[in-house]
Structure formats: structure tokens, C-alpha cells
Image (cartoon, rainbow over all chains, first blue to last red; front, side, top):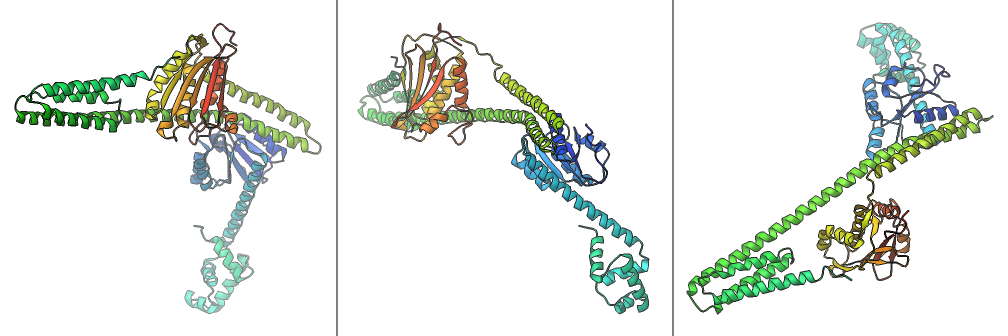
Length: 212
Length: 352
């Protein structure tokens, strides 16, 4: 394992390269450094897992044929353990079956060695962009969940009914409270959830639902 | 000139015919009680492998017919016993024919299956080997290409990062020589069977190689002609390797003629000496021949006109012949098939 990351600052994009061939690893590291990308490389998937995770958008350049765990196996393990990093495969000899499997499991790109530098760089840029979006979304969801936690039990009862489009009078009837109470709780919900309109609240509610 | 193949089948036909006549005469002169006609099964058995299936069936019916004729011609003894014996002989001939043909068919099927298996095994081994070599070479090659790209990008910086570019260039040199080492290892692998040069009679080697392909030649119904020069000097060569080349040329010729009607499939093998005293062997087929554009590439590696070919047979043949200090080439004339020739220096001349 080589540590090529002293220049890496937390929060900026980082490329992880896993390849058992040191020459290939060094060459890719240098190529990425020449275009100003931060990179860390590892000789095996185990070395990668042992290294501390870094926050900020990242993507993974993964060799397929390696002693020990193969790249394809590692991709499956990532899915099982919830490690969500965009993957770019590189391989010395790939067949169609291999690439289909890789792409079906969500890989961004499948490159055969020797590959064009621009193809790799494009794929990496795509991967990092994808990871950045994912992180932003995760963060927004986390903020909304924090807002949700500030609601009182009564306010939590009101929210779904407002989203369903019921009138204050109907909500008061359903919850067996006065219309005034509903009005107060409703405005509290709007304030705490930072919703500007009912439509906004619907969008936020939607976001809080567990994704299937 | 030698002529090996031709008189043998004739001899066998004469033998079968005389056997047929002897049995007929004996069957006719002996009396009804002697079932002499069962000996016709000897005729059937000697015709198996010589005649086609249809020919054997025809011969069997002739035998049955002769049995019936000699029953009518025979004078002495009880006619009733004669009819009985005639029936027994006819069934014996029928059963023998049936069983013999079955056996031959089964043998041919077994032979085919075996051959196919051997071919598949060869291809699989080759496929695995190719994949692993490709991987071994691609690895340093990928490093070289990527380092070259990095080098270019360091140079394009403003100002250029010369230190980084030089490092990348050094890596390129290192990885390129690593790729070279892989190739050298593969070469060593291919050479691990050292060739054994000994005085070789090319005529003899060719006859042996043809004998190995005899079954293929017969099965394809190809007429074979020999024109071997006598008193050829020996060549210093590896017998097995030269026979591999001849075998490869033979199989190519058979494939070239596969689409022809069987009466037009002719294979001619000839040996001679050229003006420089080299020994030349030629394999000529009566197939469609080859266009000049095809001739040009015929010996290139991984170049093939066959759908299932690998394009390495002729390339390997060329390596073998050139390693022996010889030359291999192909010609093709309109309205004739292709002729593949190779020459080997005669022993005593300097071999490189």
C-alpha cells in the first residue's frame, strides 16, 4: 500500500485505486496527480478496507483480476455491506460476461487495459460527481430528520394529515382537538420543518419516507 | 519416380474376385448336402474397409445370387437339403454383412469422436494460454500507456513539470522492458522442446506424415498422387517438426477441397531439388486456389480465411521451416488449386 494522499484535504474529492500491480498503480497515481486529482492506492481490497475511510466525495478504480478477492467479488461485498462508492473497473483481459455483470451491479465504466487516459478521467469525473450528489442528498435528508425530531407528538400527528390535503376543521375532527389547536400546531410544523408552503411540506414529507 | 498407392487396391479387387469364383465353382461341384456357400462370408469380410457401405451390400447380394445359381447348377444329392443349405448360407451372408458394417460404422464414429476431443482439448489449452499471456503483457503495457499519458500531461503544465515528466519517462522504460521480459519468457516456453537435428530423408518423412493423415484422406475421398524424386540428399532437420509442417499442409489442402465433388478431389505430393541444391517438398490440391491478396498474408500469424481457424498453423509452419534455414511459400494458378512448397538445405551445406 502506498499513501499518496498527503495533499488530500477532508471534504475534497478523492480517488481510490486498487490494483495488485505496482507499476499500473504508480502510473495511474501519477496520471491523476498530473490533472490535480487526489489519489490513494492499495495493493488489495483488504488494504483498502483497513485504511481509514475519508469523508467527501470519492470514487473507486478497481482491478478485476487480483490475488485473493477479485474486483467483481469486492463489488458484490460492497453492495452487501452498504459501502456506496461509484466503481470503475479496469482489467487486463475482460470478456463480455464480465463487463455485463459489472455494469449490472452498478459500475460506472469497464475499461480494458491498456485504456485511454481520457476515458479513465471522464469516468472518474462522472463517478465523483455522482458521489457528490449522493452525499448532498444524504445530508439534506439528515437535516430534515433532525427537524422532524424537534416536533412535539401533537405536531407529528398533524403533519401527515396536512400533507393529505385535509382542512383544519377535518383534522380537528379526526384528532378530536379544537380547530384553534390545529392551526397553532400547523404553523409550528411549517416553521420547524422550514416549509414555505403546503407543497413544500409535501416534498419534505416525501423525502422523509424510507426509500424502497 | 515412385508410385506407392496405386497398385494395392487393384490387387485386393483381384483377390476378392478370385475368391468369389473359387467359392462359386466349389459350391457348384460339391453336392447339395454340403453348405459350401457359407464361405462367401470370407469375401464379405475381405471387402470390408475396401468398398463403401453400398459396395459391400451390393457384393453381399451378388454372393446370395451366386448361391442360388449354383443351387440350380448342382446335379448330385438331395435337392431339398440343397434348398435348406442355400437358405442357411444366404442368412449367414446377410448377418455377417450387417454386423461387419455396424462394426465399421462404430469404429469410424469412435475415431471421429476421439479426433474432435483432441482438437477441442488443443484449442482449450491454447485459449487458456493466450488469455494468460495477454494478461501478463497487458499489465506492463497498461502501465506504459498510462505513464506516457501522465508524462504528456506533466509537460503540458504551465510551466511544464519536468521532474515529474522525467520520472514518468523512466517508468515507461522500466515497464516496457518488463513487457519484453514477458515476451522472452513466452518464447522460452515455446522453445522448451529443443529441436533435434538429424539426417532426414524427406521422402520418408512425407510418407510417414501422410500415413498419419491416411484416415482423413480416405474419409474425404481424396485421390492421392506421389511424385517423389529418388536419390534426394538428406536434410539436417527435426523429424517431428517437419512432419508437423507436412501434416498441416495436408490438412489445409483437404479443407481447401472440402466443397468439391469427390471425383475432383486430388492431392499431389512431390519432392524435388531446386537449382541451389535445396530439397523441396510440394503439396498441391485441386481446390479453388487462393487470390493474390490471400497469398500475401497466408503465413501471417492470426490471419485466417477459415471461419473457425486460428490463423496459426501456417505461421508456426513458417517459424519451423525458417528455423531450419529453409523457406516456405505458396503459389496459386488460375483453374488449379493452391501449391504449398517448402525447401530445406541439404545436409552438408551450411545451415544457419
